[in-house]
Length: 125
Image (cartoon, rainbow, N blue to C red; front, side, top):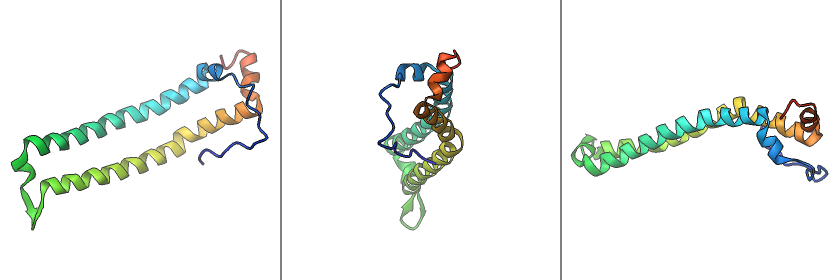
C-alpha cells in the first residue's frame, strides 16, 4: 500500500476539499486515525516523562546497578528506544490494515469523480 504519487494527467482543480472534509467517509477516516494515534501518543508521552522524572528525582534508584556497570537508567533508556521502534512498527501495521485502504478509496473516488457524483446525490454531504 502507501500513497502512490498522482500521475501528471490527473486534474484535481475541480476538487472541493471542504466538501471532502465534511463528508461522512472522511470524518470516519479521521475518527479512525485519531482513535489510534491519540491514546498511543498519550501512553508514549507518559512513558517518556516517567523516565525523565525518574532520572531527575530518583537518582539513587536509576543508578542501581543491575549487572556490571549497567544500571537501571541505562536499561530504561534502551527500553525507550525499543519502545519507539515497536510503536512505529505497530502504527505502520495498523495503518496498512485500517487506515490506508479507506484513505485510498476516498482518494480514488476523488480522482475518478465518483466522490462528487455521490455528493450530488446527497450521499457524501
